[in-house]
Amino acid sequence: MSSSIKVLRRVVAAALIVAGAAQAADLPEPVARLMQSSNIPLSAAGVLVLRGDTVLVSHNPQQSMQPASTMKLFTTLTALEQLGPTFRGRTELRSSGDVVNGVLQGDLIVRGGADADLNEDALAHMLQALRNQGIRKIKGDIVIDRLLFTPSRPDAGQPPFDEYPWAYYNVIPNAALANTNLLKVEMRSTASKVALVMQPELDKVTIRSELKLTDAACATWENGWRSPDYARKGDRIEVVLHGTFPKDCVKSTSINVLDSQDYLARLLLAEWNKLGGAVSGEVREATEPTPTASRLLADHVSRSLPEVLRDTNKQSDNTLARTVFLSLGSLEADPMLGSRPLAPDANQASTAMRAETAIRAWLQQHNIDGNGLILDNGSGLSRTERATAAQLAGVLQAGQKSLWMPEFLSSLPIAATDGTMRRRLKESPAAQRARIKTGSLTGVIAIAGYVPDANNQPCIVVAILNDEHVANGAGRAVLDELIDWVARSGNR
Image (cartoon, rainbow, N blue to C red; front, side, top):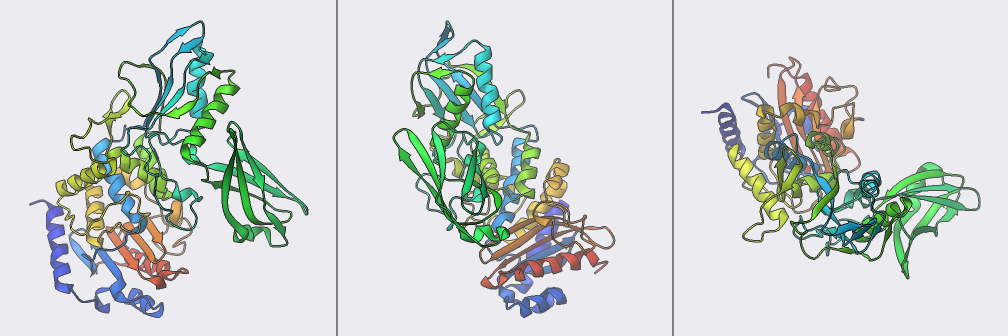
């Protein structure tokens, strides 16, 4: 019997012993005391701490809870093991037309392949490759093929997650997402006006301010911010900023306001125009897959998967996590190309369903019970996703034994050092030693990771709190207290 199965059986046994009870004795005393003083009920916590085969803390480990961004551990470790460390998303420029006297006689197809690093520089390099081949005009349309994912536009019809749909963390990816669909806006005010600079440059897209100047402190500028929007005027788009802004203030922000088809279409046209290129047709979305007989004219590949996962977990990037999740349901690794599409699903399952199937199969391979696990988009930015502390601990155990353990470990935030843990536990022995994936939503805060104890023995630590009283730092203080307790523990 493998040691991982032994540990999981012990975890289940411990859960059965405490089933239906929430006793302060099963939590470290300082942790239970802090929860009590913050009015966080013990029933709102799911906690599991393991040192090798020893269960140090077990409190509601089988309780299905909202895990917030600790859900990314399911997505990222499965991706490492299923797709491998050399996996790369890719973008291709293809055509079935011939080039005659500098004119491409046919459509130019931009085929999206879940390229996490597609931006204006990547597009410029690919389009420059066309110019280097002598192409100066496209006699046809520019066709954007997002059909790798089913549906091709996962964002279509989705209600806003919260009251900040323009925020970067709310971007829902598709197979041809450029620049995370973000506009970077610099706002520079005097006592009487606000000057705006928008990047990247998009064809026939401008920005206008309806911001009202106030005497508020520059540091509090976000308090007056209101959701931006845009208006169409013929073939032009005008982005409009609303709210208030302090006088004599300089700030930058990134906004997700344009439809992703508008964004990529106008970015492509802007970059092609810069190179002196012309196009006779329009930019449109593909309705049929790219012809297999089409020729590859230029391509771009993303960074390797471990590099992408470092941004995903350390910065808790929801869009990257969703892209990786959907990649599990649509792509496989290719040693030459970086990746290639999976064969079509006979049952016409959505890409998200295929990704969920991949994760559940991986859990089964590692003897991790999937009961109570609910997957939505693989990022944790969801009110429906659920997981247990025991399941997260199982993922972390599998990570310790994985062939790609160094890559997985290096993706996690380091306490008091980087990512979402950079400002936490600076005075704790866990500083610069613990590697912790964090998660937070309204009414939710969670941690899952590895904490060396006082004898430098690695411990798996998972804790999830689901309660309204975790707000204003109260929940984070409880979780930090637990991490600190583990880091100071010896042979308990």
